[in-house]
Image 1 (tube, rainbow, N blue to C red):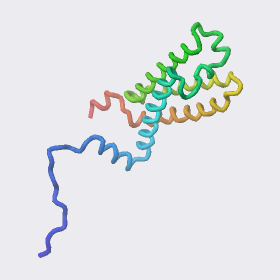
Image 2: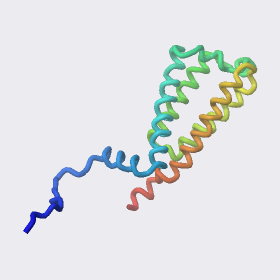
Image 3: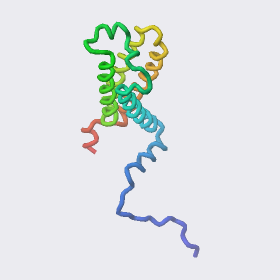
Image 4: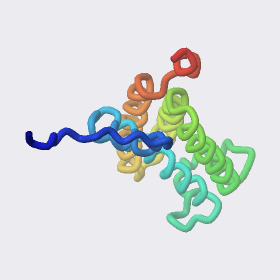
Length: 157
């Protein structure tokens, strides 16, 4: 009689790590993979750009405010950029914690950025880039409606 080639189940006391199950889902579900890529991008990029508003290493951020906006602000353009940096950092944290809600907040924020840039000749290319980011933020919000369930649904399982 030939030996069986069926695998013998191995029982371990350690369950599969959550990171392994996420990697399996990423490989098996392209929509979940897209959700993860967008989520990571909208955590990392606003965080880095928000921090850079305090250092101006990447660019002279106050130069991106339309002149009419600088004229009506009760604070300096650099102080406004510090405030914008804080908002971007909070947005990144929001995406990390609750992308289902934060993606729409980021989308609204991007609409504001686009409107500012469209009123400032010479920055239409940057406004177009932000339209692309807006499309990505809306996509994240739509995917989050499936992959970032409300706490009440998660707790019911």
